[in-house]
Length: 323
Image (cartoon, rainbow, N blue to C red; front, side, top):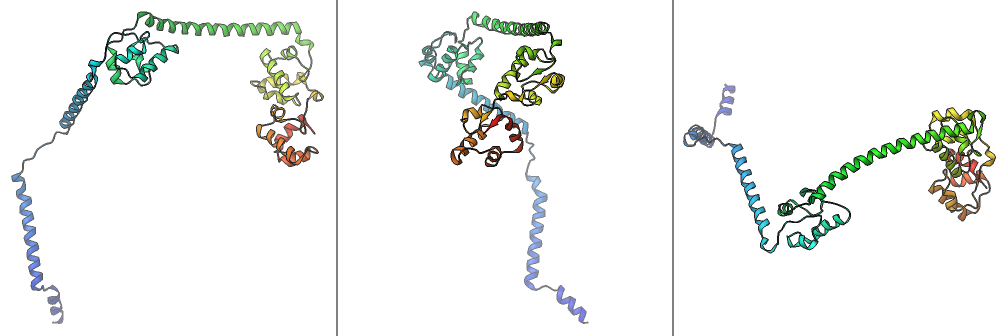
């Protein structure tokens, strides 16, 4: 009995709640009716998107053409158009045809610097030349045949120059080989057992297998920069000289370290220090700065301690400096 009353109490609605439910049902029915009858009063229209896009494109193309035409002919009565050759015309002629002063000046400057116009499209080489201005001038451009032919001749000349250059390089290499062979024969390599890197001249070095005139000159030039060689491996610092070549000549070379010219750290100026291959710009400045602030260096240990130089740099530098 109690349970029946409980459910009746829960499921019963007040008068206001019943009215609200009826109103809600009414609106639901109205919406369903509208949804079912709406197609009867409307026509389905298929929209052709591609056709719309095409029509829009055509419209804007026509609009652009009309604007361009209007700009091209605007004030054209003030211009004096006539046939002209951009290779020979004056700046005033260009300005009279409506070419802006700056563009006309650029056209003349290009010509004065050696530039030539061999076709109408070459006008685009000029800074400031746009499509509108080009269209205005193109029909009046008449280039003399000599300038067109000159372009073809220039292309042929470049090809010929390239072929001549290749032949000259080939001849140069052949001459170098012949000179090297003749020098080897003259000097007789078999008579040379050991070459001292700090005393050798070009002929001495050419006598070594794998060393030609070019490498010989580079070895001597680097020796002058260093002040002398202190070990054979330094030859690898010579531009272009490979490990294979070094291995071939190592048994045939020696080094007299007594010939090394040393730099005095207490008296050399910045330029003397900087000229050495092992002294960087920063290190040269640091040496001069330390010397001016704290006085001369006492010995090499004190030098390395004051400058806080890494061990590798110290090892390379030590044979070439003195205090």
